[in-house]
Length: 141
Image (cartoon, rainbow, N blue to C red; front, side, top):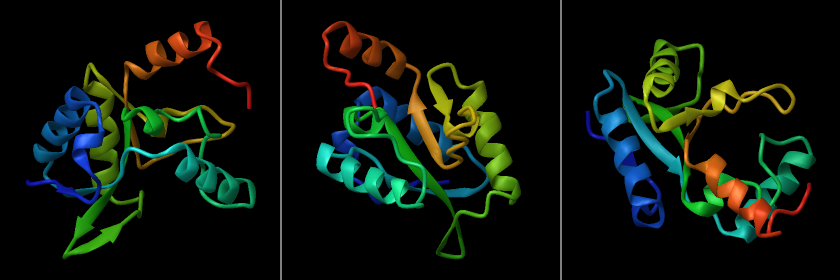
C-alpha cells in the first residue's frame, strides 16, 4: 500500500526513510508518516507539552527526530488518521519493525518513560548518540 508522507521526507536520513517507506508499503494496512525531522525549537515545544502532562517527548538534543533518524506514524482507515493501538494494524507494525534489521520501535521503550507506540527510529541512533556524548555535545536532561 502506498504510504502517505505528511512530513518532508528529504529532511530524514535517506536510508532510514527508504527503510520506513518499504516497511510500511508492504503492510496490509494503510499508514501515514505524521512526524519526521524536528528542529531543536520544535523538540523543545513538544518536551514542554510533555512536562505539562502531554504525550511523551524527549528533551531537546535527545531525540532521534532532531537527526532525521525517527518518524511517528498512524494508521489510516477510510481517510482518517487513527492512533488506536488496540487495532491489529499496530501489532503488525510492532512485529514488522522488530523483525527489521535497521529499525527499532518506540513500542519497546522501557518504563519509565514508557512505550512510544507510534515511533520508529533507525538503529543507527545509538551510534549517533555515542558520538554526541564523546564530543561533549550530549547534555544530561
